Length: 83
Image 1: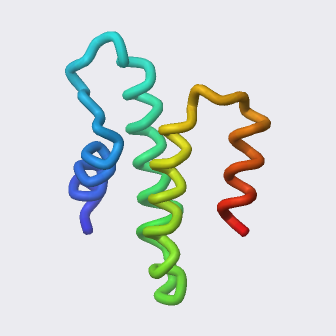
Image 2: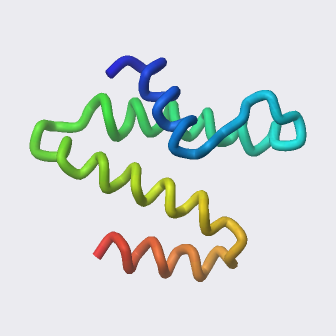
């Protein structure tokens, strides 16, 4: 998958509207995160780790949905999910 395809896929998963100016800062952060995810997780993943990429993507989607909670609660949920 190319970086363009990956970003398009992640934008769809996050229901991101890049034309919403009220969400500009959040959209910039999401796009930067997508690029880092692509290069650090998706592109360089050895074949045995490719199976875990969907799990990481699912975790990222859950994380974005849970932004309203305190950071310590989010960290606990992320650790619990990772186990």
